[in-house]
Length: 338
Image 1 (tube, one colour):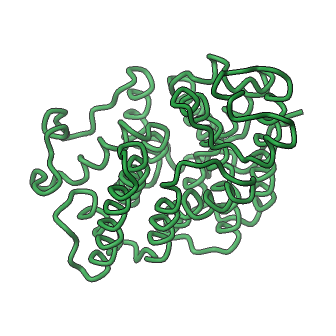
Image 2 (cartoon, rainbow, N blue to C red):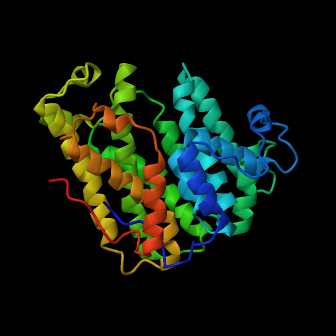
């Protein structure tokens, strides 16, 4: 499993380490100053005064728990901005699953497209995520193009259809997950070509793994988004996944797709000696990626195995903290799928 850490001691003794342990042991973290009732009741137009950070943190905790935990380990000056960025991503990601008509989804995407335009005109809409995102943009001089790429790609993905090939899935991942990492690097004050190359590959791996992890859920809804070219190569139909089949050719499809994610992680690690130490916190997500791929191998690439459906727990938190204590770089190790 990949080591995931930063320079030795850089994150030690931070209050968020205690919060991270609490999140892992209890499965829930009460963000300082955050009232569960207030966060739940916070409306788009009238968040509590100064409550935008809490709103974003709670939204990410509920919808992107891995991202929430990884954000806790970011330097304090970047942490609130990271919550805003991940909350923005959550807002976009949940549009597809919350609509019954594409027209509604297009309208919501247009809201966020206009919101980003207004943010860069110093006139953000009265919506807590947008307000906090505006502060992040001002604080870190974030690149507008990456936000627009994320929106455009999410909008194109509103169509309920499988990816035609692995390259199409990788392009989607590049314009969403990699774009998020580029923005995270900017929040950390890192503008480095080698870090960007690593982020590109890690983002692609993240997108592929996310597609794999969501397959059992989508199958229960009679939907399959796995690349059609790989399915056809092994003579596997969408119906095979919908029925939860576990034959060898189905597992071969998963193996091929998972191998592509592994290859991207290995490419990212090839930049390990060139990536600035300051960039390491952006790549804590590799811990979860390696953990999932390792567990996938243990169950012989049975995508429907119950062990792969477990929620994030203390083990993931321990991995983040223990790797940090060893002080080894995020990109230093890999796992073998074969």
